[in-house]
Each structure stands twice: as C-alpha cells, then as structure tokens.
Image (cartoon, rainbow, N blue to C red; front, side):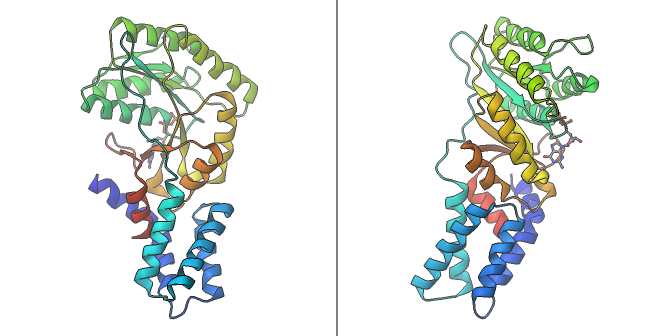
Length: 301
Ligand code: GDP
C-alpha cells in the first residue's frame, strides 16, 4: 500500500505543489483565491465543489484571523476530506449468501480497464481466501475473453467463457453464475462489454445480462469502471450507465497517470455512488481500496 500511495503522490504532485505554493504566499489575497480556484478546477474537482471549498476555506481563514500556511493547509485538508468523503459506505458486497455466491457485475466503456480490474480484484479476493470464478461476458471484443482467462490463470481462478466469437453475453453470464453455484464458490465476477456508441444496444445487452443472472442469483454489486484520465468524459459515461443499471460502486482506474484526482468528488456527487476502488497501474497488485484521508494526503503532498 505504501508503494501505491507513493505512486499516487507522484502523479498528483502537480496539484499539491500548486496549492501549497499558493498557500505559502505572503498574503492570500483575491488573486490568490482565484488561483486556488483555478488549480482545483484544473484537477477536475468540478465547479460546484470548488466554489464550496474555496468559500468554506476563505471563511475559516477569516475567522481564524491567521494566514499561517501550515494552518491553512490543515484547513484545506479538512475541507477536502469533507468533499471526498460525505459519509459513503465503500465496502464491497462480496460475501457469499447461504446458498449461492455473491455476484459482481463489472461494467464500463471499452478500454477503461475493466478486464484488468476484474483480474486485480480477483487477486484481492483470493488473498482473502475467497473462491472466485470469472465470467467473460465481453464477447464483443475478440481478445477480451482470452485476456480475462489469462488473468484467471495468473490469479488461479477458473474462467467461464464461450468459444464462439460474438456469443450472447447474457448466456455466458448465465453459464458463469450457474457454474459458480454448482462449484459453491464465494464470488462470481462477470466482465461485460461496453459500447457506448450504441446506447440502446448497451441498454438491451446489459439489461439482459442482469435479468438473466437474476434468474439464478442476485446481483450484489455493479461496479462501474471509469478511466480517471478522461475527466468530464468519464462523468458522461457514468450518467449513461447509471440509466441502464443500478451502479453500486465506482472503480477509478489510471489514477497513476493523472493529476486530475478531483474527478472523484465530481463523480460521487453526480451519481451519489462511492468510489470503492482505485487502479494505480497495470500490474496485478495495482488496485487499492479508496480511502478518503490517504487520497487527500496524496493530493496535498
Ligand atoms: P477494458 O477494455 O475496459 O477491459 O480495458 P483493459 O482491462 O483491457 O485495459 C485497457 C488498458 O488499460 C490496458 O493496457 C491496461 O493495462 C490499462 N490499465 C488498466 N487499469 C490501469 C491502471 O489503473 N493504470 C494504468 N496505468 N493502466 C491501466
């Protein structure tokens, strides 16, 4: 975790450095407040949260009657934590039910890191002594099922996939959950395809995948995977997906490659759903639970 934190610190340095330099000015005047606002906007915090934060901070600085950089930095840290963590439950619903596995559906646009996330999360669950089975319902992209099966092998869990190119994703999802029930595993994770270009098609496909799974089990967790480097675009994707399925958590990938960590706040606000996991690299260990405090510390370090 320390290593992951270090990487997050590195990628977010630009924001932290910028803010701290601003707070360390001799006097925090209107121009400096404007610059602070701009810096936060550039980090994709979103207009509303940025305004809220700057207003709250400005009030606190006024009341404190001190512009001591360390004190202001501490206030900024507290205000950021309030924004990032409005008291959301970030636990994953991955406990087996009495008679059937927990089912996790993983959705998102192609290329955001869905398959990689399924692989990494499988590894985390296996490390927690859980029996995991993967379902390769991304039958649209030819290599996706192979890629998932490779992750399965790497992590040591079975993958249910179809040998037919372009097979019906819902039928693969069904087979995976059925196999998970038969094999009495703890968690079945189903990887899906995400073609956002065709919203109606997406709705039909994802809706069907979910309905078919629900013939056998309940879908306990629907994780939407978003690429942190795409900023506002990710927000739009999130809105489309949330119209199709009931999203229970966000996985924000590629946080290692961006200083735009503020998107966490924007996404949680617009969807009312917590960021539960973050992707910090391409390797099998580069997935971490999202923690507001360490995230903010990384932003500010
Ligand atoms: P999918 O189409 O959504 O299933 O996306 P993939 O899982 O195939 O990932 C697309 C690319 O993003 C691959 O090259 C991954 O290695 C890479 N990737 C996934 N997650 C992360 C991450 O957290 N950080 C970085 N830097 N790359 C990632």
